[in-house]
Image 1 (spheres, rainbow, N blue to C red):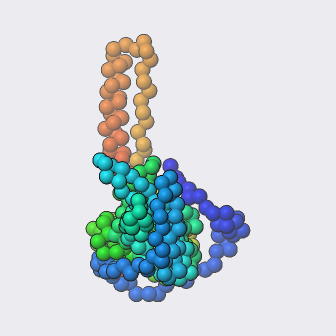
Image 2 (image 1 turned 45 degrees about the vertical axis):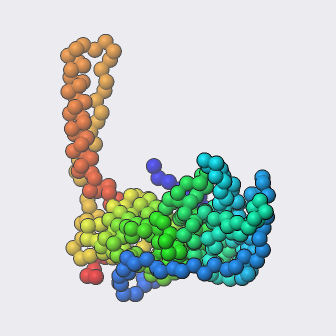
Length: 354
């Protein structure tokens, strides 16, 4: 089933006010095709100093922490007891800062039971307005590896990381402190630590973005709301583009796809704006990106026999069902090459020599 993203009111008004005829001509970027090595950014955290030590109060979870550079963090401090051991972990809910580069601290200083203690910054659980528009860069400490679900902490998934960082409308760079588990940054974008999946590109990125070599999968919503990216280069290693990967990419004019085999792409991999882009593919690979629909009809499920059917009628039905299953396997096999790249259909293709 086709899924639709929920648009902000402003975006709905813009869609209502514009038609495809109003769409300005897109200028295809002329940047040369380059490669980006699969090498994680080396990031050393330089978090600011906390200016005061707050006192933890039972049954009070929301606190505001002030820092020497003017940053204020609103955090939800959770107390938990496991096997007789009490621990305190914090969820960052809102960042207030007038600068552009946010370095989140790994620990918050609090006075607990009369003693100064370190409370681990364990998760981002940001409000909708949790990252100010002036912030263009954010660095996460290697402690912030969890998410808060149904009243408990769980290991953060790619979707959790991406959903939180989508809060930053003008983020150009997302980085992870060395030692962050499961994820890393390359050129300020988020990848899995094995470099096989592009998890998300900051919404504030602009110009031409090149996916790192060795990347196999462009994850769901990887370029979601990247409204200033004009071109994307997919290396030959990319074999899969997931749903909504290119939604609301308003200025995207060019996609360079270097794989001659055509990465799989579902029919909702590219949104309305992305479908207006020109796709450049290796010379001789057009048939892989735009295969013809196989000349085969979908098998029809046999009607079940009535309750009073004879043994012979049941035997005929059993035989018909077996034939149906065999035909369906052949149909699905014939259709698989067509449906796996359905997302590329109706896009403007150009064969080139990269």
